[in-house]
Length: 408
Ligand code: NAD
Image (cartoon, rainbow, N blue to C red; front, side, top):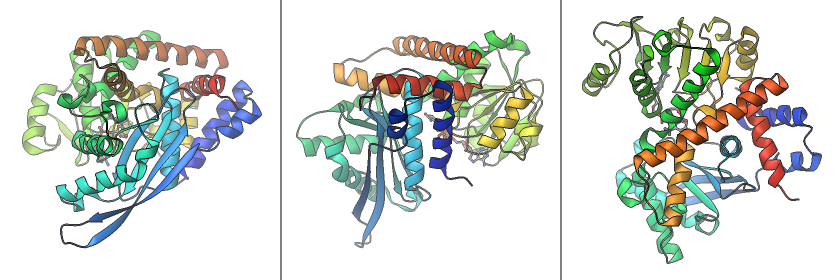
């Protein structure tokens, strides 16, 4: 598989060429501003001390404090963290929020650790990075296998070290500890605003529009639920065990009851079981990858029948597949736009924390809609202006914004 950082730099070069980006700025954007590699000793329950490796990549803060999650996963690599921090810069700039790009990670399989060990590891991470984070410097958040509870331990450790309260040092906190309303489903909600705008551009009538969602976790299940409520016909969904379909549409409420009992969507009454490969190739109007990266590849892109792909997952489409979809005329709403609802509400959480406010769910949704609709329209206009795909258009918009604020 391609090196994720090399992929990211290819995307940067493509956007830079279109806007004739200043050479010096281009050079600056080819590397993170700061990368920290951390050795984190943790006393395990057995009494033995294990040393874990962690990273924090601070890519660019031209638009505001670095922002991005911390991932706990055995496959975390420095190149992955660097690439993700670059994509966070692009994501924040695409939706035009005053945040920069950052990302962190620890090489660990948290499923093998007790709760106490995870707490000590999380506090240990903060003990190594606290001088470089803060609500005015770098604001981490949850990512793969990191939770509101972990954010809460991290905030507590940070405040102990600096000796004062700073709730905005980290987002994705539990609601009663400075978290934001609507954060739980904000990624899907942002994706829904993109679908609604896309439907206008492509003249799709909700009740006639069929949708398939691969991945039925936080992002995918809320996407299916909200689109169903908006009158769209969700005909297929899947999780790690497989998928289901019914061309007449799924009863999402009953499906959620089924999933709560059986812990999977498969074998749901009145539906046919299908595979996770099949769901991608269904004859639907909108395909929503909401699980893993690199699922739409040069091997299956030719078989995609959807008119549009809305990327809730990060990096579900490989660069080769992107080219094939473009030739086929499939509109891809890229991850940096489609799933930016999550970081946008994280930004709202930070904004509420630094101002000492708490906004209602209604207020949060109203602000989110405005940001997502604006961003979608700007990316669409840029796509039309340069006759490029939406991903390249988002990168063009983002790089233009960052370049404008970059002082060398
Ligand atoms: P999650 O862990 O809640 O859900 C993941 C889902 O994918 C689960 O239903 C799981 O069963 C399913 N899955 C796992 N392996 C699969 C496979 N091989 N085929 C099909 N389905 C499989 O994760 P999430 O938070 O919903 O994140 C999903 C994607 O969305 C990730 O790419 C993530 O980076 C991206 N994303 C999430 C957020 C967020 O706020 N949750 C924000 C931005 C991007």
